[in-house]
Length: 516
Image (cartoon, rainbow, N blue to C red; front, side, top):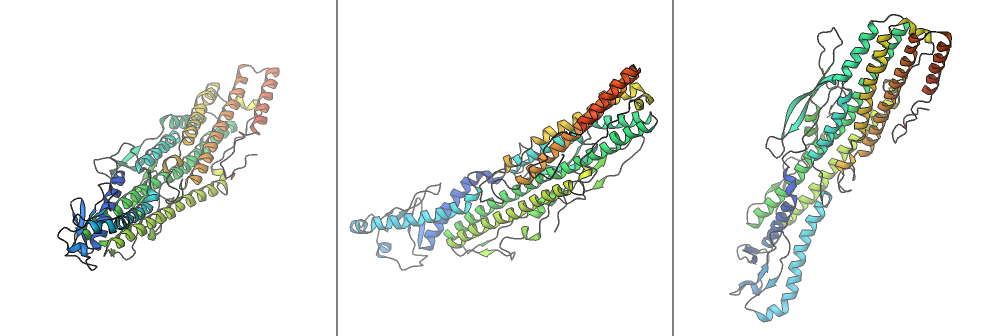
């Protein structure tokens, strides 16, 4: 099953945003683990013919799996202390009316039961270790994704409808559709460039429109869509973490309940663990964007999601036990095996999903730096003949060079700065044995972040030099004598020479871009 999430040239975007939501059930994991330890030890003692009596265990004549010892039939049977509510301690053997037996067997029994209890606790501890001491919340990842969207909104030339998670009182929260508007200043600047160019005539005017409206707007939109693609990996991570937290928590809950059933003499329960990552991430993929219409047009059609950002196969969605029926737990050991195998499976499925995210990011980076490179990298050719500037209106050129273009470059730089502050590694860091390593797919995410930030800054640099080129030439209309014309022509050539040096920006850790 392929998942399609986030994008299109029209700015499709989907996010999970709410850093102050009600915490999920995983936040109580320490209490759950303590309860499981206690219940598992209760089930262990029941299996070996002991029953709970308040804060201790006594031999049970109703559940005999081994021959009763002489201690079991005395008027005052032996006791074994039960662990505390935290699942710790317990295992001390005593027999109040048999002093000789206590002296002979007490220390041996204390060690025997104490070691058995500790072994159970150790198995549980080792199984849950990858998810401890802390496992990131999906809300914190969503908050970082929201910061990514705020960055992208700096260069959005069209409104975007997407779904986000909101807190409506439930432990998992609910989702609702919302709309992010276009970026007014950027849209007005691009519309202004087109309007100004339409008032001018000649090849120079056509060149300005081609460079600073058609081409610049196209590359800006392509970078926006690439940024949406990039930010979608954070949204996918949020969805994955949400489902993983839910699954791990449920495994512990179900195991505790099964042990309690066994410890009370109930029928062997069935246990099954699920992790529906495909379903979770699919919820993130329903979004639609609308491109800002050109001046004079009436409408612009919405376009649905079209570009895949993550591909999860069906094996990541099925029941972990595989047959959909679950496994019968006949005793405490079956339950502990269920916990161990299920949590290993959760981690492995999480690893595959996160690996798919990184593979997707790397594929996008390869596309951006390969055959599609020209769609994300734009170079303007400066005008070096001052006579071109005398053919157009001075006021129009001044608006372009001192208002329109600086506004566009300002949005590009602001977007770059905000993108560079978004981090996946800071919000997904976890135990190295959980999922796809300590930082998940952060390597590809950070490389694409660097690439996007640098491309945006480089594009801003191009626009700023274009504005400087126009402003320098514009001043020829103020003084057109031969000496001034020659001086300004030299300045134009100087700008052209500096232009060749580009911005000397390194393009990401992968060095896919060469701007030399």
